[in-house]
Each structure stands twice: as C-alpha cells, then as structure tokens.
Length: 105
Ligand code: SF4
Image (spheres, rainbow, N blue to C red):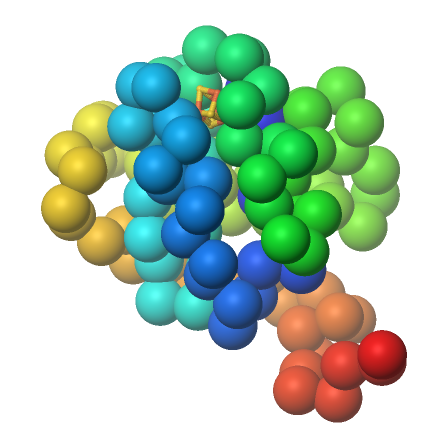
C-alpha cells in the first residue's frame, strides 16, 4: 500500500483522491489517509501530489513510520468508512508536527 506522510499535514490538496481508482484515500482532520488494505498499489496518486506526500510502503523510512501506523489505526475497527466519511485520527506526534506551522521553504 501507499502511505501519505507529513507534507500533507494542513495541505490536503485532494488531487490524489480524484486519481485513486478504488477510492481508498480518505480525509482526516489535518491530512489525508490511504486505506492500507484497500490500496491496490497502482501508483496513480503518487505523481499527482503537489507536495510529494505519497510514498510506497517499502520506501517509508523512520520519519514516515508514525504516519503509516496512524493510517493503520485510522481504519482499525471502522473497516471501510466509505467515500464521504471522514476518518478521525490524530496526526502522529512527530518532531515535524511539533514544529508546525514553522515550515521551512
Ligand atoms: Fe489509490 Fe492507487 Fe494511490 Fe493506492 S496507489 S491510494 S490504489 S491511487
């Protein structure tokens, strides 16, 4: 599955949602989440993200691990929430998040 990481936080461009053929990208409070088992690894979403927030799971490093776990948690117990339903999960408490909104340009 593909994973959305910290560049998406407070951006939520949503272009990826339009590209996904199986509608497995869901909106959270501050970022978007890819459903880890619905994703078919087609890679359609990756190039359209304007902030390069989407990576294949095998390219997730330590920094992105919390986001991968957060996506897993987001869908635990609720299964497939359906296209219009918002997933409700806090974004991971990483160093990056602690420094928000001071983003380097
Ligand atoms: Fe959807 Fe394909 Fe992206 Fe997975 S890789 S989230 S199936 S667009």
